[in-house]
Length: 437
View 1 (tube, rainbow, N blue to C red):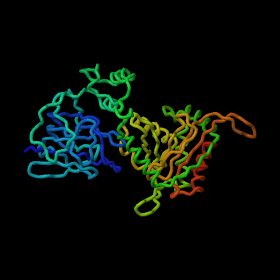
View 2: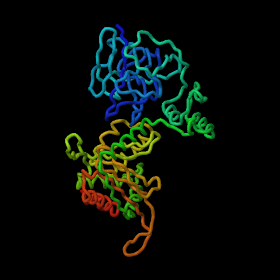
View 3: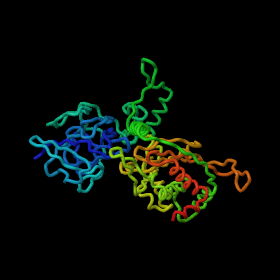
View 4: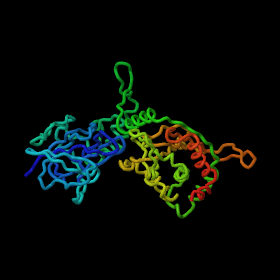
């Protein structure tokens, strides 16, 4: 017996309430199997692939590419048989099915399909598409929708994202890839060709208006909430980090660090993790509901990374258990995952303290805003040679300015100052790493 089932956009965690459809991997009339990736959606934090919870035939795509969908709204209708439905799993996310005579709910773990062996991803040929609508019907269709819309241009999800970021309709781009696929180079050439054209402006006053969504929207909301709820204070410390520069040069030649990109950020990260042993107040949060200070056992070290989707802050779980080498490797891995779009929602949730390296942009210092729920964020300025007193004489030394922003409810000035001083002491003399054990 076959039934029409609707797949609802699942709860993607961390308080996320909506997601934007990046690209469908199936079309109307396609046969899908358990675990087959149906669609890629972008939340405020990451791009997530959603696998099919059951096998069957796609009846209708209920939302179009680029549409923003609320959690719990139906996104696709599939005609399936009763024995092709995923078994129950952990209730981290919900999907709802709808049949002609009854309704049932089947829990599913977001980002993972049922226990059946995952099939290889199907290639789209651009045909068989039904009409897409952003309207969300309250019942499943009873028959496949007849094709009324022209086939959408063929392009990989990253290319589609790049087009949306630049306000380009892929229907206007000529694809020179296999079968007419639009490549990144094709899109870049189109963008460069249109660069001389004036931007779209409103007819009323000549303003350019850009919709705020995705990562940029999340960041704006989070920063507004942070400033409105946490009393934030800042301290600065300029350090002679010449010994750290010498240590980094040595580590880059050490066989144990072969293949790793050793940077000052790794030394600062290790110093922060160790200093938190003496100053746990900087690794805590304020429970608004109970007016309690929650001191965290684990240090989930957030690293602010600039990406094509905006500023993303993944965190390294249990950083206190990592050696300097392991921490260096983790920093490189997280940065690469963010910039390649492979960062997961788990990478982005649960941070306890954050580092941001504004020095890579040639900035001496900054006053960053706290991530909501965290007690502190440490900004690292540019590392450059400047005149400085050394051993009673003026010399050119490698100086860096550290800026610590902290929640004054969770730490007072003395606690924050001593924490910052301990981090600075490590940069001034890396042998202090041994003092923490």
